[in-house]
Image 1 (cartoon, rainbow, N blue to C red):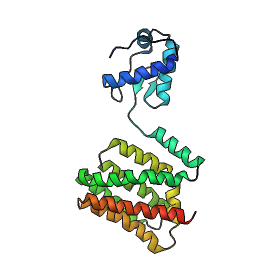
Image 2: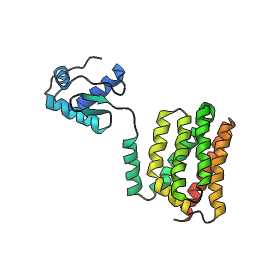
Image 3: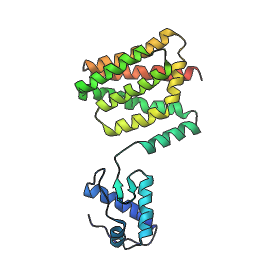
Image 4: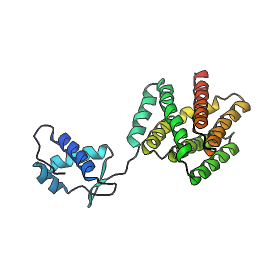
Length: 233
């Protein structure tokens, strides 16, 4: 792809967009460098400060990292911006907790479905280890909540869908407090044991290679979690 001279209107924004297109067209991967500021300035027909502003815009989006003495380095995909967005949504609107659970549910259901089809022996071993640890920490709710995060992310990893993994991870982190509150809203040992039971049933369905059952049990798990959150609000 050839970088072309651009008009003088909103120069940094135009530069940022052209660089995004350039990264895609050239197939640049994480760790690779963009051309130097001087070379970019020459290609665009603008000053170096304008190029630097465009690069800062890309850095703020998490697309590149500007490393002193090295230049603009392509960053790997991550979910930091999504985490910020979802966290702010939860802070600004109480109702958004339930809305996020509703967004997360179909993602998690599909994740369980795909994990059943794509999960490896290593994935299953990891899930079994987590489920066992959850059973051992059922009454240590903070530890259990952290293991719950690991469980759902392990399923997303087994689904082998990077976008789904990042979406689930970013939403789940924003809801961590709400999930802990949901666990605390279980009013008896039997209700806590039911939480563990649904996790185990999801795992067993994935292990058995039954995608429909895995999706069904993940749906049940979420329906019960949302009910617990709503009941005490």
